[in-house]
Image 1 (tube, rainbow, N blue to C red):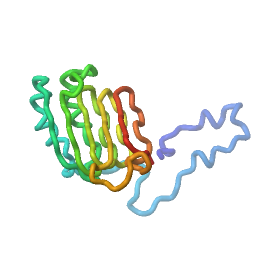
Image 2: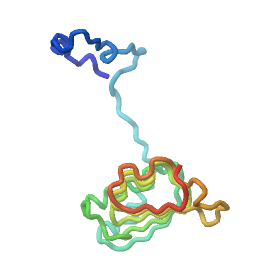
Image 3: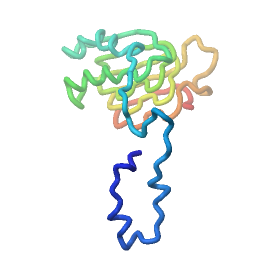
Image 4: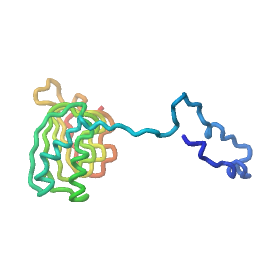
Amino acid sequence: GRVDRLDMSDALEHYKTKGLDFSKILYVPELPEGESLYCTSSQNHDFSLSIDPELIKRAKPAIDNKQLVNIAMPIRNCNRTVGAMLSNKVTAKYGAKGLPNDTISVKFDGSAGQSFGAFLTKGITFELEGDSNDYLGKGLSGGRIILYPPEKSTFSGFRNIITGNVNLFGATAGEAYINGIAG
């Protein structure tokens, strides 16, 4: 977007570029009044719906002393990237080695938002009775994700979509068990 910053004189005068038209590549679009081609303001990241701070608080014995922790809590579609901040706390203390398997076990009920279990590290298990949105397990890094339809549901998991698209994108390690179809 910053074509105005390019010095192309040497390239345009080079013998190999004779006859080439760069006008479409180097086009500078007209901008409406007050608009910019580059970032001129900061973004407001709203973490008010994040449940990771609560997870971190409840998982403190596991993070500090490797004590087994079992957590149960509801989850809603507006809760996004659940697990990323928790995994950061574990990784900051224990590195890529993480914690022993199932040191932190969290049982969720409901509909998870986008990127449920993002970057989940070793030692953390997320069990979700419900469904999830796109990017489940994005960047999975050794953790475990278990997803299945609600016990009281009237449909069968293996014949219905219970998670969105692009699951496990960028995953490098870990496990995912999904009793249903991905979008």
